Image 1 (cartoon, one colour):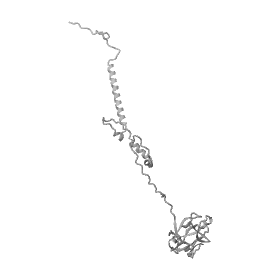
Image 2 (cartoon, rainbow, N blue to C red; image 1 turned 30 degrees about the horizontal axis):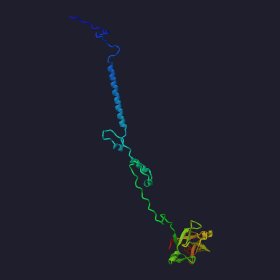
Image 3 (cartoon, helix red, strand yellow; image 1 turned 90 degrees about the vertical axis):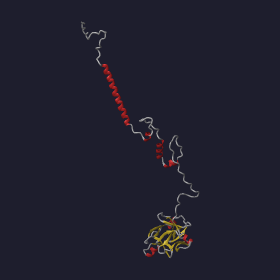
Length: 275
């Protein structure tokens, strides 16, 4: 019967000569591997979350960039070259219309847009004509109220109240109405041959302007309201209170009277020139 051998003490070497390492805790290597794996897993999760948030924050591509998506793979966007059409359009809006239509500067290299064609220039003005309006001249005839068929008419150098005659008579009954020589708020009457109607010895006549202050005052008459509807009375500048009236069909300057005859004789209407 074989004899049983006793187990060697734990604190003594084995028969093979190996002895356990009592300085290291059992299972330490597996703990280190498990820890490293856990750290790698957490890092991968954090990276995935970060990338996902970054793509979620990116703005949607503009229409021009969306059209530039590379068909070779989903989700890969190639940034398109900025369009020159938009820049050119904004430049045209900021420029004045004349600058857009009359500029002759060459188009920059590589520009994808062109300016609209220049507007045609205004046609040249024919020689001897002017596009500016010519000043109009006011020609008037003076008609009596109580003798409506008679007008002021120059006869023998004096101004009379005569009926309308031929063309020469019509021309002598037509006067250019101008601002008063002595008062611009009043009237002066010029004839076709350059004379002016002025009173002398209180009788109205046609005389050449001698440039004197007396002549300017004698040839200036201010319109006043007449008792007759639609008519005026003409008061002298240098003889206030005296008005032009016809007497024996001669135009003269007389002081105002309250009689109906005076008021009718001194009432006149300025009508279109007879000539």
